[in-house]
Amino acid sequence: MDKINVSIGHSTDIDTALEDALKSIKRPTLIMTFFSTKFNPYEVYQKIREKVGKNVDIVGNSTAGEISNKMSDCKVDTISIIALESPYINIGVGVGENLSKNVKEATYNSIKNATLSLDKNKKMTVINILQRAFVKKNMYDLLRIKFLINILLMDGLNEKEEEYLRNLSKYIPKETTVIGGSAGDDLKFDKTYLIGNGVYTDAVVLTLMNTFLKVGTAMGHPYYPTNKGALVTKAKGRIVYELNNKPAAEVLKELLQTNELSYQIFAKYTTGIKSIDIFGEYMIKSPMIALPDGSVKFYAEIPEGQFLTIMETDEEYLIESFKKTLFDAIKDAGSPKKLGAIILFNCVLRYILKCHYGVNDLYFIKNLLGEDIPVIGFNTYGEQGRTLGGSLGHFNQTSTILVIGNELVDE
Image (cartoon, rainbow, N blue to C red; front, side, top):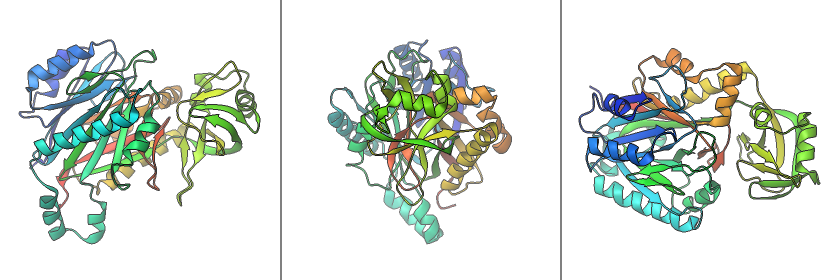
């Protein structure tokens, strides 16, 4: 017997996508939607709300490309909708508005509202979960169980992801799972939209998922380090002014052996910072654009004193790294024999890279796991997650994957 029912709709038409998403779902627990900015976000939300009623949580955002197993590859100018139905999932949704003006207040409000919403919707308690799991599972398996997932959908243009995450870390245990992505707007870089039981801009939507199902996450990128790099000698926020005490753009051009710093160059060759924990992962922090004063703006914060390593890739590594991330997420979920859904947060620069190599993530998911595994996601303007060492961060050119099993934690 299925522990979760999942249905997905994906179309160039809102009504068609919504009809398909609700076709086999009677009482949705959560609706999630990812859509192009060609759609009116208020119309998207209103049409979904009219269909599912006032008591169902609806979250989502505008994108730089929509992903689902209903298509052969990522699409643009479409809308994808997933409906989840399970008595083993509690949902709490909280919105933090005016993120660019007051991050601290937006963070507090998103957590407060999500917690209140979760308490209101609660069908089961952690003690119920613990009692059943402790009877059947050994200690190793118990340590891997995740009772709470924080799913973040953030404005992708106000550059407040790191500041939000720093504030979020003050409220949640460091072991708590966090995963998500920053909303896009089809590479217009004008305005992104968030849905959190309403429509918002300049906001963050925090979805708390308290579940009895096996869930897991993983994060990975398709790059390996070279022996080239430079020391960040002057930087503030996302702007690097100097590398090796020289203008940053000048040094990057020399390292990349190019006369022009473009997004095409930054998709193929990017930069990474090595984590200082025992795992020593390279986390991707992508350059965005060279500025007139010789500095370089990045898509993520770059602290002074860090060594910025030039990263590169090839087709084989691009494929194998995604497969590893996918299976790491499944393993993190306790390797359920039945999968309920896969949710992908995929950087738009990574999408440009894989298009360059003619690589299709959905092909590998379907080939490895089966054609019928429900998959949904979107191309982001940045990804949020934890390193293997537990550090919470905002990254680039990365895939973060959430796996929801169709099994209970005591199975």
